[in-house]
Image (cartoon, rainbow, N blue to C red; front, side, top):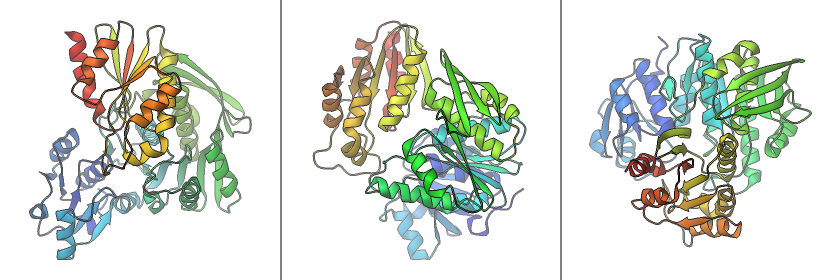
Amino acid sequence: MTAVPPTMERPHFIGIGGAGMSGIAKILAQRGARVAGSDARESGAVAALRQAGAVVHLGHDAAHLAPDADCVVVSSAIRADNPELRAAGERGIPVVHRSDALAALMEGRRALAVAGTHGKTTTTSMLAVSLRALGLDPSYAIGGDLDGPGTNADHGTGELFVAEADESDRSFHTYAPEVAIVLNVELDHHAHYASLAEVHESFETFAGRIRPGGTLVISADEQGARDLTARVRDRDGLTVTTYGAAQDADVRVLRVVPHGLTSEVTVALDGRELTFTVSVPGRHYAHNAVAALAAGAALGVPATELAGALAAYTGVNRRLQLTGEAGGVRVIDSYAHHPTEMTADLEAIRGGLTGGRVLVLFQPHLFSRTRQLGAEMGQALALADASAVLDVYPAREDPLPGVTSALVVDAARAAGADVQHVPSREAAPEVLAGMAKPGDVVLTMGAGDVTDLGPRLLARLSD
C-alpha cells in the first residue's frame, strides 16, 4: 500500500462531497488514512465516502473538527468565515489546499495531468477507463463519476496517476506531471482571471511545471492552444506533441464519422492510419479521445492497444448522459455551461439525430460567468430548435447588479432562437413536457442543479 503523506493521516475535508474534494478523500481512505469531513448536504458522493470508511458530518460546525485532525483540506470555494476553517486556525491545525493534497498523492507515480478550459473531465475519464481496460490499473482523480467504474477516483496498484488539472483558481500550478494535456485555452472563471492574457500566462506556468524530459500534448486546432505552443515549443527538455485536424498536427485527425450516438475516428500517427470507435457522439469528444491517445503514447502505451481500449469508455455522469426516455422523448443531461461546450454538445446531439427536434432546458452557472459570456450562451442556444432558460445558479457567488438570465434570453432571441424564460424550477418540467413531441431530444444543460429536473420531466412525460 502506498504510504499516506504524513500530514494527511487524519485529514478533515471541508466540503468533502465536492467533485474534486471527494476524489482525494476517497484515495486517502483507500490508502489507509482516517478521513473525516463535512458537507452541506447528503449526496451520492457523501454516501460513497461513508462506505469507504470516512466520517462525514452534514452542515458546518466547529464541533465537527476532531481533536486529533492533523490537517484541514479546503478548496477555493470555502470561505474564510467557515466555522471549521476558523477553528483550524485557532487550534493551529495546518490548512492544505485541495491541489496540494492531490499533488502529494501523485508523488512517486508517473503523473499525467489533463488541463483546458473545457473537456478535462471527459479526457481524464477516457484515459482512466482505457488504461484500466489494458490492465495497467492507474490511480485517477476526476471531476465526475465514470459510467464504467462508477466512481470519480481510485487508488490503483499501477505506476500511473491520471488527474484532472483545474485551472479555475490557478491551483494546477501545483502539479509536476510527466505528461500534460492542454485541450484549449479560453477565457473563463472571471472571478480569478481579469483577461485572456492572464489565462495564457497561467497555462504557460502550468506547461513549465512538466518534468524535464516530459511531454506536452496540445491541440493544433484551437487558437489559444496554438498560441501556447508557440510560447513553449523551444523549451529544453520538453517534447510538444500536437493533435487535431490541422495540416501541421503531429497526430492528425483525418476523419470523424458519426454513427448515431457513437463516432468512428481515423488518425494519422507515426506515418500510418489508425481507426477506432468512440462510444460518445460528436467531433468535440472524438478530439478528446485523440488527445488521450497521444498522451498514452507519450507514456509508452502502444497506440494500437490504447485505441482499442478507448472504446471501453462509455461516458461520464452529466456529459451527454442519457437520463431516460418517456413518451417517445429522450432526455439527456449535459454539464455544458461555457458557450464552447454548449455549442459542442448541441452539435453532437444534432449530428446523431435521425429525426425530431433538439430542445434545451438551460441553467446559467455563476453570475460572473453570465455577466461575461451571457451573450455567447444565448447565441449557442440558437442551435437548438427551442429552449427554456432558468434563473442563474449562484453556486459560491453572491448576486451581481443587473446580472440575470435575461442576458442569455435576450441574446438568444437576437440570434433568432425560440426561447423563453422560466423563473420557476418547479414549473420547468411542465413547460418542457408541453413543448416536447415524440422523436424529440431534451437536453437539461448547465453545471448547477438543472440535472435534478430530468427525472421529473420524464415522470411528467410518462403521465
